[in-house]
Amino acid sequence: AQTVTQSQPEMSVQEAETVTLSCTYDTSENNYYLFWYKQPPSRQMILVIRQEAYKQQNATENRFSVNFQKAAKSFSLKISDSQLGDTAMYFCAPLPLNYGGSQGNLIFGKGTKLSVKP
Amino acid sequence: EAGVTQFPSHSVIEKGQTVTLRCDPISGHDNLYWYRRVMGKEIKFLLHFVKESKQDESGMPNNRFLAERTGGTYSTLKVQPAELEDSGVYFCASSPVEQTYNEQFFGPGTRLTVL
Image (cartoon, rainbow over all chains, first blue to last red; front, side, top):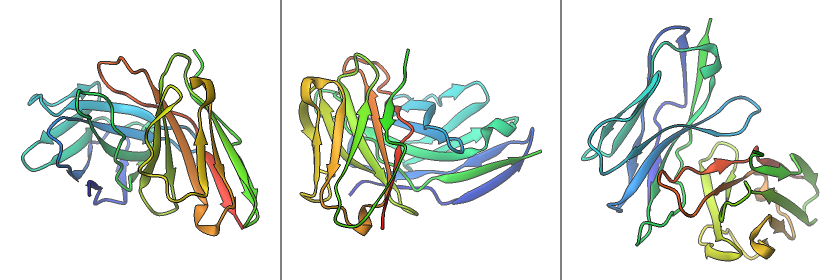
């Protein structure tokens, strides 16, 4: 079975500080993408950052960056200069690609509830 | 451009009743997914449509769940008869078939409560 473990159910961080959310996953697929999604309170889930598993370079998107360790199957998210609007539930989600590269389905962890405090 | 929409936002029903959830994907998105989050657990995949065809329905919990996507546009997910363990948040997501980065766009979810 393919699984995702987010070991931190809840975290809090002071505004302007840096926080890292951890994620490990287990997939037998060789071809996949990795995503972090966030779901703010009472709002829908949106993409934070994506990483192609075949790329060694870690993805960066403004204040968000990842530390992707493929051999260890680890995919952590770092949020720099945390803002109040970063308060949300964060989900790590691998997306295995089917034969031929077509999309499979996302596999989610239980999520980490991040609170940014003023 | 409108995002993925879901109706209703909340539904409270009695055990044994029937409920139908609806998802309208982003226009032009041929991939449509249903996921479910039961309280305290992971979001789980239910099924995947490509246009009107079921690409993968391996996540459907049992035959009380029926999903359709007639005409390849909106989709419905019917639960009949509903059981207590069906309570949770049902998410729909869509994406284009031809897409470089494979991002799925999510709807706001339907919170289903079975009493």
